[in-house]
Image (cartoon, rainbow, N blue to C red; front, side, top):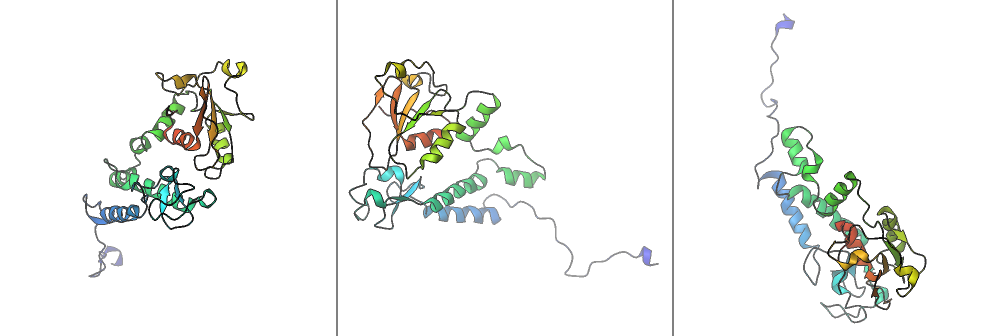
Length: 259
């Protein structure tokens, strides 16, 4: 009877076993890690040799650097080939910056000491809790801060942006201030003003053992700009570079300022 026949698979068409995760150091995961390592060798600063951070080119040559690595070279020359470097030629490579951020995310997936979240889900054939595999430090601190209903990063802080901003567009910085609970000042704060010094807010996220917790007003300038305001560090008013502001956001911490 046709209904009693046993289905048979022709030789050569028999389905293979379900794919399994390859042992550590072998297979597609190892090849992906090796490819990422080769890519990251091309994404290193020509001066410090670390992975580029806010990559910039000086305009006259093909060397690429971290923005902080060449802040002392503007107006002189490339530290590698000595090609003259002028402030108007300095440009951030935004496409390269996006690629570096993508590589960082890939590395988190492929090089985690524990199993990456994606790999763990595939192994267990079930969704894993994201918290076990989240990026540590800044992102983790931000999540915990929000869950515990604590003040935002820049709660109690005021920011005045002085000069021109090309490397970090001012509109983007202002949006970050608003998202982090801070306020933007339309006028430059005067350190010797009684009104300025009597503002009684306290920076919640400053380190408790630092006099920075009493500083609530920051004059922000762009590192790579030729605009260098007079140094201010008096009472509640301090001056800070835009790179410090970005580092604070990335680490979700009100970082100390150099004396």
